[in-house]
Amino acid sequence: MTANPKGTPRLRLRTAVTVAALVLAVSALAAWRLHAPGADRDDPARLVALRRATPPEMVLVPAGEFLAGSNDADADDESRPKHREYLPAFYIDVHEVTNREFHKFDPSHPIPPGEDDLPANFITYAEAAAYAKWAGKRLPTDAEWEKAARGTDGRRYPWGDTWDPKRVAQRRRRPGDPSTPHVLAAGKHCSIGPSRLQAVGSVPSGASPYGCLDMAGNAWEWVQGFYNGNPNQRVLRGGAIGYGERDCRTYVRSVEGDADT
Picture (tube, one colour):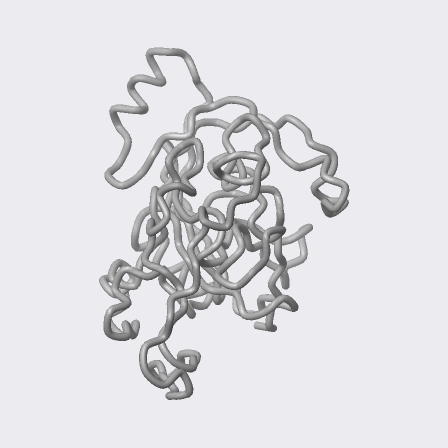
């Protein structure tokens, strides 16, 4: 897979489950959220039943319309204009999938000391898809991710319309000599020094209207499908450690080349 023109994306997983069939998809070197599809019915009794059935560590995003896209002057053409979209109900994980969780699926997944609760990182799309199938969940669609991140009112960031850097995870300081290489297991990528990511959910003030954490910053997240139908391109959402304000906007997409499908 080619490198993201803005830098190397981090893998982060978020799970979401809906009430019907379970499907999963993930891409390389990004962060994930998993989920499964929900029901179209949104009557009060159905909503109560869905809330009661919410799986552990997940939240329900009810069926209904939400404001997608943006009218911001610097928004990409594909995001303009702001418009309404309807989605059936679905569940989505509150937190990203962690190294600890991914290790249960793949014992060869390396976890540097003290990084058990960091978002799973340096995972290929194929590995992520396999994990998703194992977990019985799937990645959210592009639209589902956006609704879970911004709610129904079209806010620019998960917490509102005003940028606040304190609501996104800050880079962790690297202890010791940052030039000391940390080599991952055979076949994995290498990184220099410990990860700069934060433990999942470390900034609760940045929660989305549905209570989803780290949907702005910390690690990039993959969503289902291909970018504009191109089988060599996947979509990333949510920004990452070290990226700027614009990448943390709820409607912004980043595109990653992906030969490992």
